[in-house]
Length: 197
Image 1 (cartoon, rainbow, N blue to C red):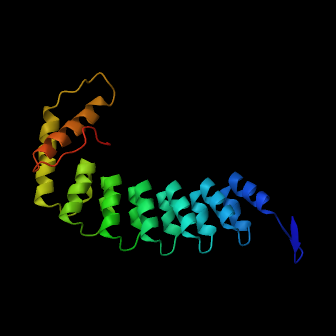
Image 2: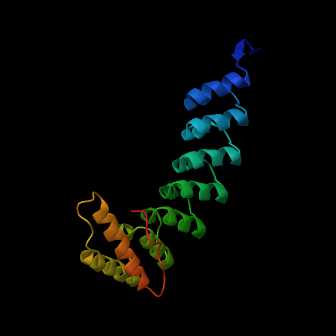
């Protein structure tokens, strides 16, 4: 340990041990090194709110642990924004004026993230509903193609006969088969055989 102006300054090993035990501890460390910052956000992503001007590497470490940590980053780069929405599509709600690339990445992670996008394009609506048919609930004015797509998915789901004795199988099979059938009717676009529902 060092002593400066009568204050005890713990060495870097002690600082790292402190933040690895509790990420909140970084708020009590004056001018922590990047190594300490990385250890803190590695333990608790939201520790980034206590770091002044974190490097892009620290920002990436935080949002890769929790995409929602982006809300504490001032002016995140496109790379940091992309990492945040790839970790959690809903992180887009904290991004001011997200690019089209970021919007697509968010709805591809979770179609319901479309609820945070103002006036989504037709292509974005399609991507959201293909990822999660329930995303239509979050589209204020769905385009005609989306309405037809969801209508076909619902009709197909009604005709599907899953094994009712297997818990959860019914809804997963219905959703997957409905989307696959509806998608095959949409100009050759294909969905994965088994989606995330």
